[in-house]
Structure formats: structure tokens, C-alpha cells
Amino acid sequence: MAPPTFINPHPSKPALRRLFDQKRKALSPLEQSQKAWQLLQGIHTVPAFTAARHIAFYWPMGAEISPVPLLLEAELQHKNCYLPYLRPGSNSLDFVAYQSEDPLILNPRGFLEPDPQHQPLIALCDLDLILIPLLAFDAHGQRLGWGAGHYDRTLATCQGSCRPYLLGLGYACQSTDRLPTDPWDCPLDGILTEEGLSTPINFTS
Image (cartoon, rainbow, N blue to C red; front, top):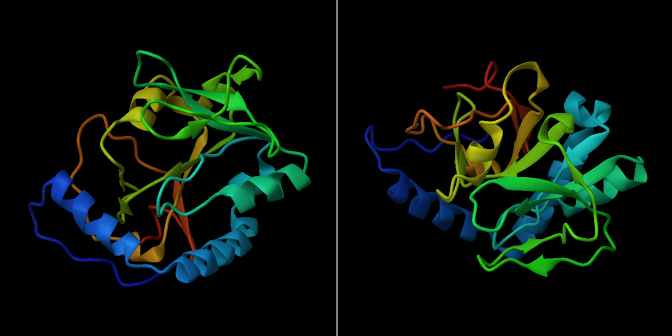
């Protein structure tokens, strides 16, 4: 794992979002593509992916690492794939069945999502694995997103043994020693970067 970014002991989340957004954008398109390819090779080391039959992906925005190659790999393995859909008037997500040739619609908040009128939804607890984007992650499985709280609000409704495995996707340069947390933050079960899989029990702090 690349050395983590050490930060001020009392940083604000907005300041951290600016810092790690800049770090991610500093990667050239070629570097992003190469790292995404390396990440794809590492997916076979993730038991949760190998065993999963129902996997929720996300459609990348900006410099987010793209899970689309993983989605295509999952389709080749005859796994069932889904994308998040933001419920109108809500900050919670539903997960809609998706295949790579399906059209996407532009959400008013600026991201692409499937049309739930044409594809079925899956209950959150029926998912085996959810791939989640991030701006930063730490040694304890905490994730920093853009602050909208869509995933945290959604996952709060599904806890315990029926909760899907939560796998963050990111670049190794997005690692930090410790992130500030709020009570509603939902930690990840693992992080996959171009350097391989890490979990909270074997992250180095």
C-alpha cells in the first residue's frame, strides 16, 4: 500500500474533500486508466466478488475510479448487476438491475442512473456486494465521500447479518492515516486499489 497521507489532527471534512479531490485530479488520464486496469486484475483476490451473485456497481463521475470493467467482467461470469438510483425527493438509494447495453438517464444532481420504470429493483438485503466510490479512506475502513450521505442513509436500513459486503474502490493515493467520523458513517469491509485488497484488520495505521 502507498504511504498514507498524514493530515492535521483536527481536519474538517470539507478541507479533506478539497485535498483528496486535488490528489485524485493530479493523476493523468493515462495514470487513471492504468490504475483501473491494475485494480481489475486484483478483483479475483476478493472472495466477496468471486462468491457474489448480485452486485451493485456505480457509474463513475469525474476522476472516480471506474468500475465499468468490473461490471463487464461480472456479466461474463453471469452475475446479476445493478446501479444505484436516487429516489425522487429522497437522499436514499434504490438499486436497479442493469446490463451494459441498457440506456442511462441523467439525474437532476448530475449523475447517470438506470431507469427503474424499465428494470426491476432488488431489495438491499438481497445484494451480496456493493461497490462504493470514495474520495479518501483510512486504516479503520472509514470512507470520505462528497457529503451527500446517500450510501450512509441507505445502508443504515440494513444492518447485521443481512448487510451486503461493502467494498470501496479507489486509488492508493487516497489513503490517509485517520479520517474524522460522524455517528451515522458506515465503515467499509474492504478497499480495493491498484495495489490490491486491504481490509480494516490488515490496514496499517
